[in-house]
Length: 286
Image (cartoon, rainbow, N blue to C red; front, side):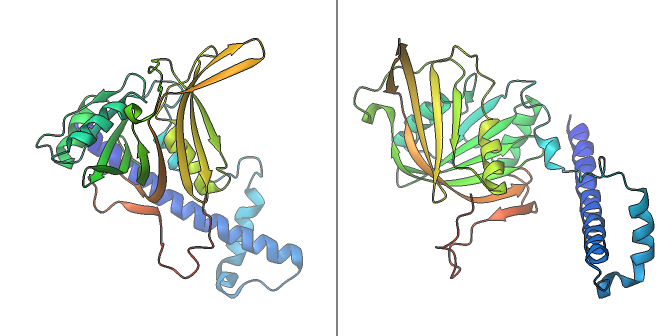
């Protein structure tokens, strides 16, 4: 098992390296084509290879000249096979974090909760890979209050890390309904950019494909890069629809995406939040 995963990981890294070469070549062709069409001088850095690039451009098919994306391999089984999610906590969890982890586990159909115990990250990932787990979710806390969640897609990544705030647990919501086991419908509001689409895919593929008659709804609403999560069930009587909040509810904010699993300290960083830059308050990334 470990040898197979190591081989597949090497193949994945090779595809990523080849993708970078293709992207560089594609960019050079694009710049050369734009200069030729506009009647402008060829860019200085392309003059030495302009003839070779032009020859390759003559043989390119516009319908098939598409860039490959290694990220497509990460979720190639999405929608074909139901995700298998494992939820666990940081080391030495408080009673409140344990309770929240139990509620958090109920959000994902057919998921399992794992007591962290003395497991280190390498062992966690190895155990999950051996049992064909698709996603490892780790909930963190600060002084007894849940304040972060890490979503690690297996076996190759990505790993998305979110801060968490304004957590309201189910037993703190007055009149919270019972938790349905139906596969939920998902609503993603205001995820407009490429990063927003990336984040919505990371979250979406934690859930299996629902049936049309499911009455369970989960909403991820983005406002100023803060993702508000709400969990409801509904009943429809004629034209009237009655919503019932199930909980829990919280806000999340993305702070990093890495192209690797959580145990790989040398994994490439795809995106990271930079809140201390002068323009950070003006930018909306998702």
